[in-house]
Length: 523
Image 1 (cartoon, one colour):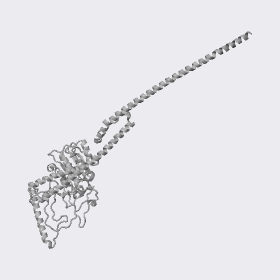
Image 2: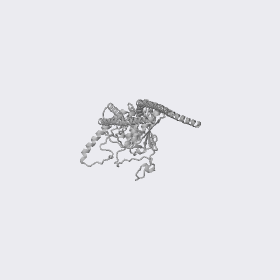
Image 3: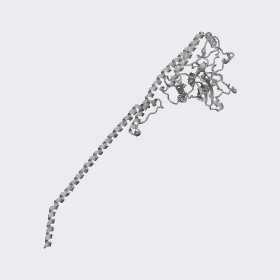
């Protein structure tokens, strides 16, 4: 009984506990769930706040980076406009100026660097193209103007020669004034020819094959005060070496510029030495002065201009423009000469003009140099006479030497026996200028009277038998001395002009198309 009572009590207590404990457990569970939800909400809020902060920080960093990048681009752009572009323009004028790079090394290789380089390249190409166009236009203006002046100078030269021919009996003082004008006109011709050659013009003059020593002598006549400032050429040529017709005037212009340059930069009491030599590859002419010389930079510039291998722009010639070396370089490039400079034994400059064998000929025996040409230092050995009926051949064929010069022959017909030959001019006594002028004027007067007498006799004998013509086919009827011979006076000793040697022959005044900063030794 007792046991039943206890069991009932236990069952009743459990039912009471169950009835009262179920809601408490549920409440506790709900409380725990709410706490968990609150905790999760707090965590979510903290995470959202952290994400927002991170986003704000990232946005701030991006803004800072963008601002830094923008400032860097602005600095580089300002540096490009204020320093790099002006340096590039200076570099295009004077290559030794360097163009600076970027201010910020971190930008090397970036799109900003590539864009700036592309901009600099585009500016350089545009400036170069425009400079070429402007330079070519300037060269065309100079070339056209100087060519017209040179053509007028040649016409004036012919006019002065005609005055001397038409007035052989003029007063010596008047003739001296005409010769002075002739010399001045020759200087004007060189002053006009040199800029024209430097800008692409042609020499405008064509001559016959001419002795090399005569070219050296006549080139000196284009220099002011050449009698006092240029020494007589020293002729070391063992053979009568000549220059082909198309290269005579270009070589004369080259030598004239070198001589004028040497005279200009030498003391007034010092003479310029000229010597001629035969070389293995042709011939050379050496112009040596005792002037102020050149430094290393000037030598480099001179070699660049004289080589003719590099184009020369007008802006490189200075102000006033020094066109002498540029003109020589143009002729070197066109005709195949070679001009080199070295220090002379006197401390000045020695210019060596090398003429290739392709431009040289061996002059015929009957074509002697002019009276002004110096005799060779060592006389050439006379050639052995050829057997009867054997025709002379060029030296290269006889000896097999490919470096020997071709020999030009004059075509002449046999002349009828005439009076005994007159003594060579070289054997006649040297005369004073005034005496020579007087003799030459008398010779010209006698020549004109002789012409008139011949014309009368010819008219009277027109109906009679024709007389045998004993003149050479090279001598035209009523031939007169070359227009290049200038002087006047009674006698028979011609006096060569002061501006060019008589061997050169008359010059045409009509332009024709040709075949193909300091000391600087440049005028």
